[in-house]
Every structure is written in C-alpha cells, then in structure tokens.
Image (cartoon, rainbow, N blue to C red; front, side):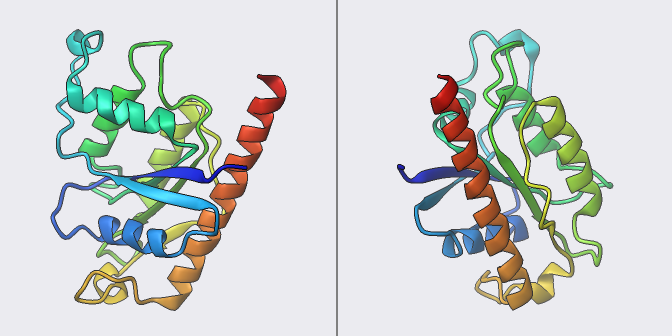
Length: 190
C-alpha cells in the first residue's frame, strides 16, 4: 500500500500557535508509511456564497490538498468555548458548493492545545459535531487536549510532555488505520 498522506490543518493564525507546535510534534511521531503536511489558513478569505462557483485561488488550493489527502488531522484552539472562526470559515469553504464537499468520507482526527487548564474540550466537541455533518469518519480515542500548553512546550516550540507525545502517537496510529480501512473499502467498492 502507498504512503498514507495526512493533511494537518492549523486552526490558528497566531505566529507561535501551540496548535502549530502540536502538529509539528505530530510530524515527528508519525508511524512508518505515513506523511503529514501542514496547511496554514492565512490566505483563506471570509466565506461568501456569491464566490463559491468561482472560488478564490487560495480556496482552490486548499480543496485540492484536502482531496489529495488520505486523512485530515485538525489542530484547533478554543475561543469562547468553540472553534476559531478562521477554522470554521475554512471548513465552510471546502464544503461548498453544495453537493461537492471536499470533506465527504475523509477520515479525520482532532487535537488541540490551549493555555487553559481544560485544553480544548469545548472546541473539540463542536468540531466533532461539524465533522458529523460533513460525513467524516473520525477517531474517537484517544482525545488529545493539551491544557496548560505553555508548560507542555519548550521555548523552541517542541512538545516536551512525554505522556501527551504518546497520546499524539496513538492518535496518529489510529488515524492511519482508519485511513487504510477507508482506502480498502473504496478499492473494494470502486
């Protein structure tokens, strides 16, 4: 079987985002036979349904990367008990036009980091609801919620908490298995 291609989506625009650091850690912890490429949402404009037929170039590139991936790994911050607006905006763009969602059937996993002690529990709950609506099979366990993020990452942005590193590694192994199952099912039916 070919290498499993995972697209890691950074749900924050912040320069030194803990969620970006978490995805960098995930790149170090991948199982053999998988690759993780990161996508930053900086260039995605605000969703406007009037523009969905002639999508902006940045959105077209985003959709192409989603479609080329075997699985998606979301790293979401938590703002006001939910996902960041920039992440929701990007998700909405890639789900359009109606009936042509790039997300449909794409295996996904969710993790997140926050300075708060609760991590991203509320944001992940909302993101999982969105993924159900998008018909994305999602890894349920382990849940990777990196609370007190300032104490979990070194000054260089490296994830230093060994227990969390192990959880990220398990999450990735489970996502790769889900992606392989999904690809095998497509090959049998396709």
